[in-house]
Image (cartoon, rainbow, N blue to C red; front, side):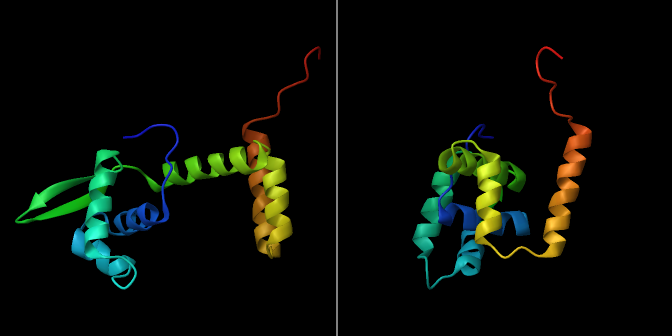
Amino acid sequence: MPSGKLRLGDLQLKILRVLWSSGECGVTDVHQVIGPAKYAYTTVATMLRKMEARKLVAHRVEGRRFVYYPLVREGAVTRSAAAEFVDRIFRGSLTAAVCQLLDSRDVSREELEALERLIAERKEADPPARPQGS
């Protein structure tokens, strides 16, 4: 399994989402789900081979077809993408990232309450470090 940053293009992410939801699929199945009008079958097949070379997916042989399955978990991909987003766009400032998201999106009361609960849980689980000299 790859470690560290998991930089994925849009097509790679679409393919992984299909595999995460189904567990495993042949190229034809993936192609049908992501949109035959948008991507050629050969494009999907080539991308799966490239993703296998990167150890993002693997395959087993079933008759004459390759059946692909994910080697990376969705959580690992989302954590990596979120960390890269905060680092690249907001120079590592989680506060700046959250402020921008709150300013640029409609946020329901329920979402704000959920965020408050998450922050409270994090404070309890991992109290902030004491200033030096205390």
